[in-house]
Image (tube, rainbow, N blue to C red; front, top):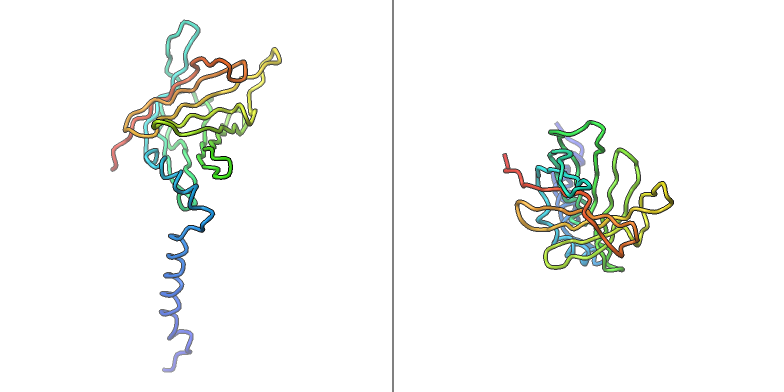
Length: 195
């Protein structure tokens, strides 16, 4: 039986296509190399984590709000990290879910973190730097603040340790556009063992 030539060539075409696709996926364009190198410095954030979120009351006592499992994964050939809740272990069902994206802007030389929640739907944009193993970002420049009833604004600062299997992310608030900061939330991340 004679097969059309296309069928005879199919394995060769498939192999060539696979090799080209693999090479393309591993080769970053020149324009992406600087942000990829910057994002590599955050690679220790990747993985599965158990998080415990606490809020501080007026007496300075920390109170547990929620315990979750979250996953932090790399995407776009290492140019993006995305954090998503995978399981809620405790806490109110009304407590909003968060989706957090981490990127690096090579032209402004800043890390950028976007946070969106299922409660208010506001995408909060943070910018800052990585120094001494901690990513510190604020929403001062973007002014994606939360309005207060008295006409004021709440701005936030995130202090994110990059390394370690257990770490505490501090979330501070400011009512004076970053002149002063005070504790608001803290989230303890504990790396989960691979199954």
